[in-house]
Length: 67
Figure 1: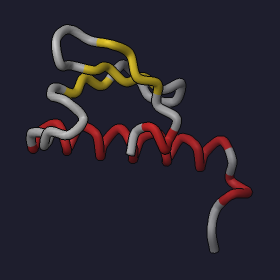
Figure 2 (figure 1 turned 45 degrees about the vertical axis):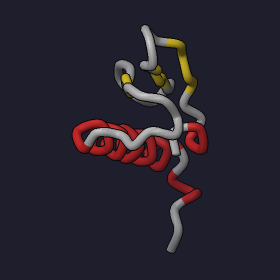
Figure 3 (figure 1 turned 180 degrees about the horizontal axis):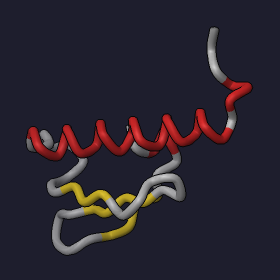
Figure 4 (figure 1 turned 30 degrees about the vertical axis):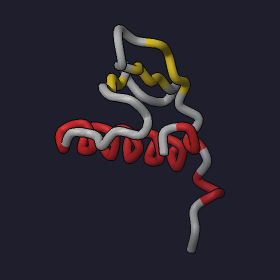
């Protein structure tokens, strides 16, 4: 999901990965391997980050809004 929105994956310590995006303030840290289930709080953080980036993309490109 994060890759689809062009988040950049940075290596973290152990099985953690950090994700950054120019339209997202800060970084998002996700623990576990790609095949592992995320913890509920991490799922919420990912959804919030996606929402923030999508809202900022709409602000930057209002002509892309769907009717």
